[in-house]
Length: 171
Image (cartoon, rainbow, N blue to C red; front, top):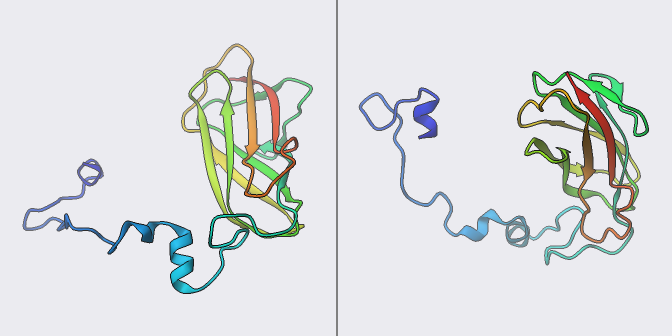
């Protein structure tokens, strides 16, 4: 269905052939820990058994901006609703371990409007950014609360600095 909706012909003499067979020999190959065990390597930010490696883990969300303007937590922020805005989350990996598959989220409280992105790897002790575009344009009018979050990673003990909330009016 996705191929048809993208205008790609399927199955006829000029279309793409689609195999109904499995594309991997075992579904375990879809799990990073299984792949790491077969390659005899460790995953960054964790061990191959899914537990956190020893050491300090976690991120701090420093600030959030849209189109180069840093949002303020204590005052109203005005943003354009359409097209759906892209938020840039500035974070610090405050641990002494590189972390992998770190999830960044932005939600508009009380609505289904949200966005998510995954950072393949963050470096211990270093700052970085993550960009998240909302799934759709938020409604305009009454002020709303936008919450930006860096999801906790395995072994992270302090999560109080993972989120920031902003009062926002979308226009």
